Image 1 (cartoon, rainbow, N blue to C red):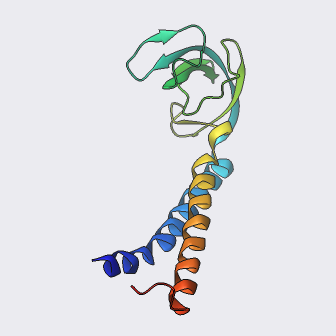
Image 2 (image 1 turned 30 degrees about the vertical axis):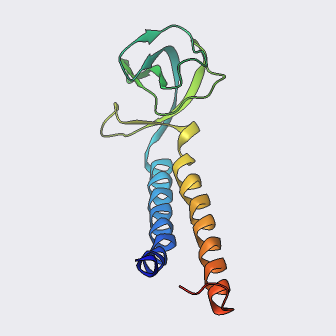
Image 3 (image 1 turned 180 degrees about the vertical axis):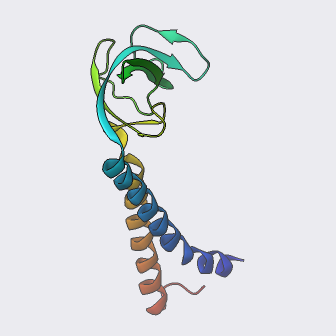
Length: 142
């Protein structure tokens, strides 16, 4: 059973690497094809629908409510990441699709997912190398 676990572990770094590349390509495409603009934070909303006019550290599941204008039409949507320094009235950089102005990304969080999966890939690869070296020296018997 333990041997099967370690055999499957060989696949983990590869899967994480592929995921990291996919997320990085997605972010790069957004940089290339989306239009950059500025939105204003008009409030904060929890995942339960509660709305606040300020951010405090008691509510960690809060996202900013953003308002922005495209071709004279105003849009309001939830941002996808939050910085503890954000407050109502702050301007944040956003990127939106030319085809769907409501499909936005906050530029602040564009590369967070690829960075997280990249770090996990490095840790998984280092653990795999340590495992292989220890097993080749006979320290690990499984």
